[in-house]
Image (cartoon, rainbow, N blue to C red; front, side, top):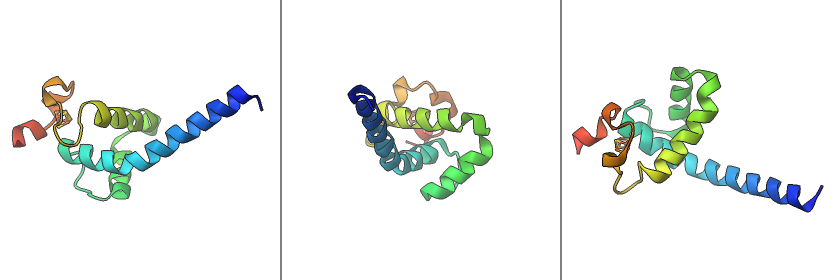
Length: 95
Ligand code: SF4
């Protein structure tokens, strides 16, 4: 294996590990704010989301939730004024 491809593999593994560690926190926060499900544990939430999304969208939805949670729907002060899905989200009305 070339050094460049080994480094790329390591980058991918590092990113995948970071996503795996971050996923339960982000999915709980976003599914709660968006009221996607009444489930509260990460596994239950994931199973509930799998029921409402076609399998072909699971990978995109996972990535979209992670980036939305990192950049817009952040933990302490979600940026609702800049959020593209605000009109579909009940959270700002509850604040
Ligand atoms: S409107 Fe606010 S709480 Fe709802 S998804 Fe957007 S940033 Fe998160």
